[in-house]
Length: 138
Image 1 (cartoon, helix red, strand yellow):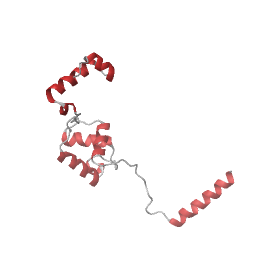
Image 2 (image 1 turned 30 degrees about the vertical axis):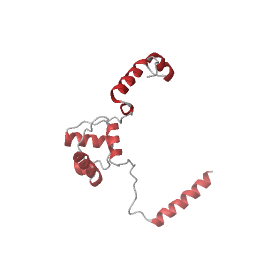
Image 3 (image 1 turned 135 degrees about the vertical axis):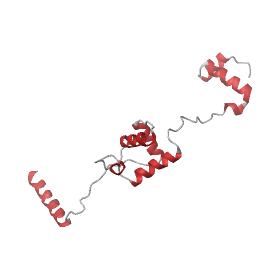
Image 4 (image 1 turned 45 degrees about the vertical axis):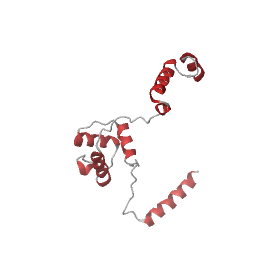
């Protein structure tokens, strides 16, 4: 607005000349408020809030085996993609499902197995025997 050409302003600021033109026109039309960056709304969600809640509750409350994936006991993004496709007819990529898990505050952890009926005395004896065995091979 002080007499500089768009070309000169673009060189000073380090942006494209067309960008300067867009900013000038926006300023003329809307004032300084028009130049305030707006948050992009992004792509619309693929599932409704109710569908996301149903997915969350299913993953939280049930195993894949209980919802029709025979022999599979742990949820993965891939299994969740199959479940969503079957239940809601919506196709997700694995990365898209991982993003949805993050938004639903679900995190992936590897399953750990604990021998519930293991004898603590035998376990202690095994550790001692193993430590002694390690010393003899060194």
